[in-house]
Length: 355
Image (cartoon, rainbow, N blue to C red; front, side, top):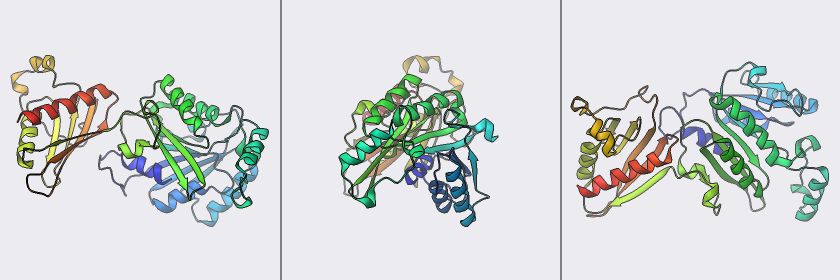
């Protein structure tokens, strides 16, 4: 749940990369189980969050509703019975809701009851850490990778009706399978993380979005040692300048960006700026096509980022020592084309170095 919070915080409409206490958020817990624990935790941590919780098991639904009632959360958590094991996992239409912010899921890990038993025997776990989930919660045809594959298929149809689709994974080997499924579906924006409790229990989580909002790199690429081919494109580009003052670097950026047909805003007190562009307007071809009366600074503001091909946040981080270097951190906020992001970063680095 904490990872989901950070995922949403770093892809919010205000581009602050921080918790927005005024943002209304709706989440869907697929297969909430007998406790409805994740919606209850989410509501306890975030007062403006609401949840829809689904399950196919009548007993689970009954106990979940009791927990919601005991915690006085029935105005914020609505529980629905899934139609069947083969029915929609993300039933927005049958629930009667147009869009939500995210889904969460702790899917059945195993393909069969026999696999579940063998896995328990191999791990030789003590009783206190043994799995106590019912078979309906632990076993599904094709295992967890197939279950998440169904979610991916549904997301292809729902697309932007959900900002972030996500699921926990119980097997490290499932990550590569799910990432391959995402790529085949055409998803370009995903995030992975490792969930560790103590020194024994280890799980993983994956989330994907059909939208352009990019999470921070530490949120999107949170599994140490995972092959780069299974990670989303880095959403951060960092370089340092050693012979220019912060004032000179700022002026160089102001001159460079002010000559381009894009929207931008610089906040001197925070040494931070935001840039929005509808395309690669810094290429030679684009600059040749630019009309003389377009040669003016355009400031970025809320509501101006429609049809944006690239959104970035630029932050200067000077070292305190005299004549020390200044880190230039370019954070990819928005966009689906990594080539444009790389091109912008390379252009800005080159222009500052030439100053």
